Image 1 (cartoon, rainbow, N blue to C red):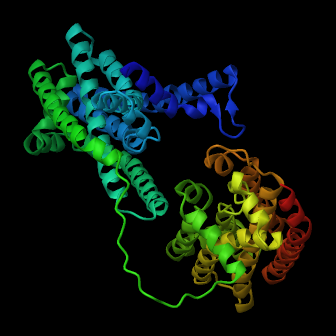
Image 2 (cartoon, one colour; image 1 turned 135 degrees about the vertical axis):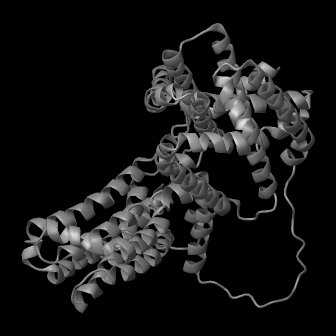
Image 3 (spheres, rainbow, N blue to C red; image 1 turned 90 degrees about the vertical axis):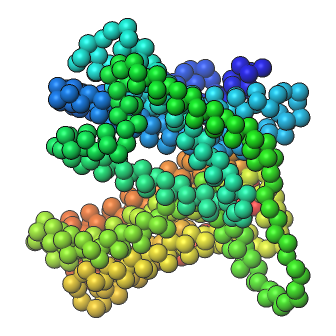
Amino acid sequence: MLRILVKKQLEEVFRGYFYNSKKNCMRPKWQIALYFVFYALIMVGLLGGMFTGLSFSLCGPFTVAGYGWLYFVMMGGIAAAIGIFASVFNCYSGLYLGKDNDLLFSLPIPLRTIIASRLINVYILGAMYSATVMIPTSVIYWITAGISAISVICHLLWYIMITVFVLMLSCIFGWIVAKLSQKIKNKGLISAAATLMFIGLYYYCYFKAGDLIQQVITHVDSYADKIKGAAYILYLFGRVGESDIIATLIMSAITAVVFTLVWRLMSRSFLKIATAEGKTAKIKYREKRYTQKTVFGALVSKELAKFTSSSGYMLNCGMGILLIPVGGIALLFKGKMLAEVIGNMFADKPGVLPIMICGALCTLAAMNDIATPSVSLEGKSLWIPQSLPVHAGKVLRAKACVQIILTGIPMLVACICALFVVDASVPVKILMVIVPLIQVVFSSLFDLILGLKMPLLNWTNELAPIKQSGAIVASMFGGWIFTMIMMVAYILVGYKLGAFTYLIICGVIYALAALTMLRWLDTKGAKEFEAL
């Protein structure tokens, strides 16, 4: 039974490799094989190659200096971090929030078997990613210092220690997230924020890792003494890689004890968390006046609620909401330097800086394609907006309006920040605010038309129209192409007109195109929506 459950868990993890949620059917065998070959190339070729190079650069100097154990501490830490990053989210969803929890609990299957199958699934995923670091670490060390039977055994135990450590931390983080999720109302918004924070932390550590490694190499004696004095357990952990039998026995015993404690914690809390429905707040009724919304306001509220309830929708289609103001704030700190660089590059083309900044902000705005999958996300419920006593054009306008609002407000903030950087006349600065906002309206309507022309309504997973739709690719690259044309055209011929005249022309073109698309949505677009 355990083998069957583990197989089921792994098939769920790699479900996208076997099943086409876009077409609602199984993939052909050649396509499945191609997916796994690509996955192996990423794991072995990209990650494995990268960490092989890192191992090669660290192993020799550390081993010759007599600090081989510090080499294993550093590489083991990297392996643990990679494994945790890869498996922590799967632990939360696969361990506690399995969609088949009710079915499994109703079957005559021991609870410990269900827990064990979930843990093995998390362990395998973490071990696969950690292996991309640990295998090159061991191979490069054996090439440098030699190989023996004792060394192979100790390295296998070292591998098990790291993967068990990854499993334990993943379970602890998953347990914390599961406990918090029971008390959170808007889980989609919190999940998106947590994912962004985790990814941001990962990249911060990634970019700081190079400086830290260089610092450790430069002051290896000092760091080695500090680790031995303040974190002796790390020293023992590194000695395992150097085939120290006593250190291997001690660390194996510690790993077994800690794993036992985590297993007991899991056994006691798993059923309670997996079957919990969350706390329902008791609200005392109080009579109050309710302000009636307009029809259009209600439609916009519905679309906004759909967007904020899905973390996948927000992360894949709304990154510009965060990046646009970040870009504006970055201009406040680095704008003067950027102005000097652009001024030197295009010294013979006056007024290029306002155009480049507008183009850069519009490029960030193109990363917002909220309106594109909004029609497809109606899915099997499409009949509901179609049957409402509301003109279809108003329904489509509401879908575009959400993107206009969520992109326009950050764009306004970024444009105001850009005004402090550009040394231009007042009319040009005014146009630097107006033109990007008109482009936001144009982009929102353009994205909605693409979604209406290329709908994907037979999906089984909402991420299919969000990530795998051709309309998404066309909307993002289309926005970038329009912006690129605007910047390149100014560099080639537009500078002869000057920034003020050129921005007026761009604003008029965007405005006329937006009005044309809006007219089409109210007439032909509405009919196409009703006919879907």
